[in-house]
Length: 459
Image 1 (tube, rainbow, N blue to C red):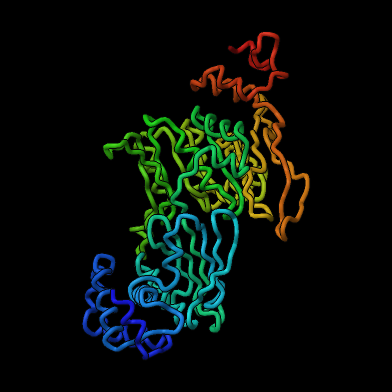
Image 2: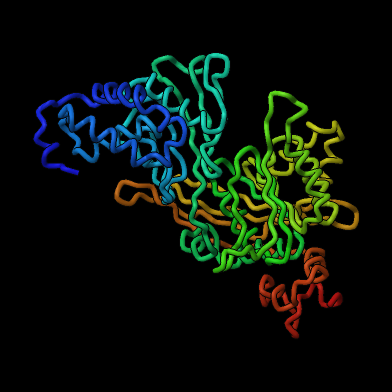
């Protein structure tokens, strides 16, 4: 491009004025380029924008020619300044509190305000409508709360006029699934957990133990679950169920692009016609007929909790997540959700869910934005049916300090208890080698021959 010629232009205008003028020109003469397939026609659209700017010597004071073309294209065919944030691999969330208040959460845990913002409240609404259009959703006065998606990796919740102030425009939460697949070393480096805790979760699930990962939003539950599932053997069939938007991508391919593992990914489908709805319950019922070795229910929010625990108690390895504030409260939360399906006695439901999910891991994002597995528990059921929630591992916070004006939480991981005799037996029966099992049993809990004291008669 002839940048020198462009920079000599004298017609300096505000960006909004230039945008309005160029939009009118492009929509009048080349509208099909944008409405049909804007991505494929990207270079052509930019060429027409450039020609118009050159023909009328249009420029702004604070943008180069190339930056102006990019900004105009993004406003017209993409998602304004949000575009450059949406497709990065180091961003987890974009939270829009108002048209002029946007915060970005990075993978490092930092939350940083954007330098850019929308021009007006109505501009923010227009961009959000464009985002939601991708998933066939409409934001208007009759539907002021909309949940949609931009792609398999981007989930959007929008609050519009009617539930927020007119001066705000929109309030939005955009959740971006990090495309970088974390490995065990990443969790250890980030101090999410220590190596033994991670090995215990992955191997316990590998050998049949169902588990629930619990915690608040953005505590790292889904990322951790995705890693656990990725460690399962390639010959085992995995069936995943997600609500509306797919975050998991567990399919593995070799250098010839051939699939080498055995995965079925499913998502729910909402329809205005209830008969056409495909719910998590429906997908769970279907999943049991396709012979899975492991079932993943991405998140339990409603009556699917009852069917998830049923699947776990029928011998399938089930992983799931739930919103709860501790390991113990997780079971009571499950009971509440199960009652949405059947109004059974709470004690009965409690017995069912504790049997179904013997392992619970509580994840938390702390004040310094670091994520930790705060506790891993096992529910031990004795012969009389009594339940004992036993802490196996925990993260001990020892101090909170300030470094360079930022909070820093100091702590360490501790192994608290050994796994129960009943779990040890189940793991052995499900194929876990003795030497692997012994990794989770400290030497002080073994006899002179090195066997775990509690199961020496069972081996």
